Image (tube, rainbow, N blue to C red; front, side, top):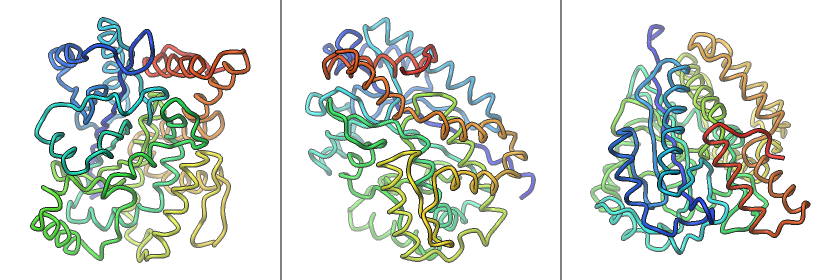
Length: 379
């Protein structure tokens, strides 16, 4: 177990926007997707044509992850410019109208839209997924249970969706609300063991509710493709360094939970309910949230909750070579998330006399520049 590498992979979803209007592309984006598939085989499609996904190979080094994602972000930005488009990472698109989106062709996507109807077309959202390989794949259900309380903090650090349909939402991570319209989303259930989870999947599949376990869209789940536990709670991170930090924190937490079988053992309905409350607090306030500590029965300032997490995984960060990436969490907590920067850019534009839509265009510009890596402070 000590020699296990805890290999990881990161998947990022991005939005496409019209370079002139900053909204939904006015022309077909199929030529962009064709070119992306030819030039960047790591790219993939998502539910809507205005989205594109990239992924890293299985890795053990965060320097390689930074290089892989940085290269893909830059290449996609260049390709988007060739097609009069912008590309950016955020949990929601600040100005695009969901009713104008075109679904991606394909049996899986057509099946999803047939099953969920209008709420599927309303899923104008982008997230980041992190896979971490575990020594014993049969232990993933137990790990899913025991890592549940940490998900609100990871969401808060990744928050990048304060706008929806051209309006401020008052939330840092509105993406979760839009995604929550779909079935089998949000926090996973607490399963007694791997057999109970397998029984649930078997019944759901035989009953025709799902085709396979990939249709369980929880915020944390065992992958059916890889021997990994997959984190799905995070908004798509505008800043590359923030994405690496979320991945590093999750990777360290997986290692810590494997090596400490007593960590969060025996969670119950109260534990899940408190995690749900904390998830709402993180969604609403991001790094400004106070998170409830079940053991102490108090609400802790975000900085205190983060300090406790970083102390818990310090040994794991050192062992996995990601101390710097983990430490960046304190920078996010001090200087703000993408959501904070977006709101600051919007407020500054409004104070300068720009109309609501013009201010949102400034937000989109900041998102595109920062995703590529060429932006300074938002305001």
